[in-house]
Image 1 (cartoon, rainbow, N blue to C red):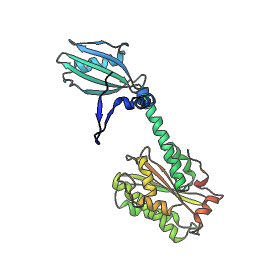
Image 2: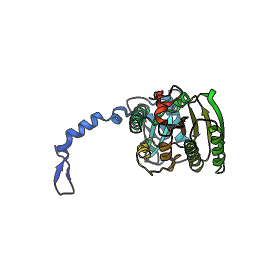
Image 3: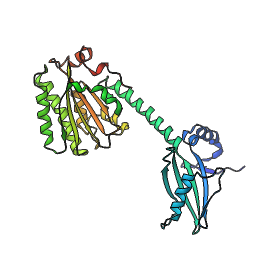
Length: 309
């Protein structure tokens, strides 16, 4: 058996045989190769399609291929299509390999299990980020899934709200928050900080997404301001930089103001899977230095007792 020789930059000669066991081990553990299988192979020849693989091409895919070859547009080699079976919700990746003017080879890969495995991998990765960020921020920042946000919003405690879409709406939001803060037992400094945090969040929504919504809730011992948008959200992998690196900025939804929110708020809940939703909470304590600790120990409402994940 002959092995291809590989000469590295240092001039040393290595053969594939040196690492063949490592390669085999890696391939055996690959979840992609474990789930990806070529499902069907067929050939279009002389205006007819016929299966040449072990399994016959299903009727739905057969009909789709017939429509493709019946159209006037020419199918180039290397062309690919992704289709979804409406009945089974299975996803297929179809490759067209042109052999000549009258013959085309078609391979069909079933991606359904690959996509499932990928989603599980993403969920595990997201959970790791949730746990790490919660630990690093000592519970101050919690990542929530889109369907978990509702547990923080008691509609009976709803105070006021408005939609935002233009730059001058930011001043209206500041006025709305100040009106909500009137009469609450918070120092002027803490009230100003809440207004600033909401202002930063609203500004970033208008600047980077275009429009969103602001809603204010007043609980037994806190005020929560919720800002949501339907933008692209934030890549979860960026969150460690956002939470740990001062001055780190992203052009998606939040930006530099995120660090201000972490510094000034008592708790911040964020969901970024379907757009971005921020739930900003500040304890109604007049003591600035003890406010955060009192919020954790309070008998009233507070995020400290809500378990996420």
